[in-house]
Length: 247
Image (spheres, rainbow, N blue to C red):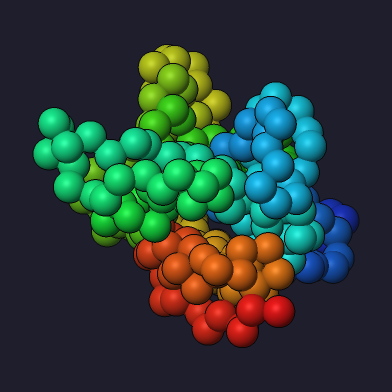
């Protein structure tokens, strides 16, 4: 479930007296800031190793513990695909050769790379302005904990390029600039303490995904489930959940 900041104000109330709540709110909603961990997803293009969602050529999939079974399969497909690189001994790649069977071949990078990549990042939306902050090209969910450093005040933190999104602390306010290459770029601003709460929610959502994959794996990848789940937890920098026995 995405975590979000809700500003609540009764009609005629001074905006300076706005109260804030998290989760599913009530009252008069003046502003909602939503933060999702998202994966970049491309059309499966004939993928048939396990069930996935057929969809648009490009979209973002928000990760959580509440995905459908095909959505879990889509996320696993995408993360495995991000690491589907043939070992190259001439480049110093000492991983074992790619297996001959299609499933083992596709999962090989996910199961053998020490450092994994998952294209995506955090998506932040401000309902009051319609502004959405998205990860740029080459940004990965494996680096999601870098968002925690923003409130340390060490300077701007970038999240990819084309666009060039940046987060930075100004006093007690976090400013998210959608594209620093644009002088008039849209921004989202929120108090640092509430930014931390949103990140706590993101961590819970991320933890829910490998836990759900642990339930999904035995029925779709019975011979690889435990290793795949461990790899998913590793790429998200999270503890490995317990995998049920294969069915």
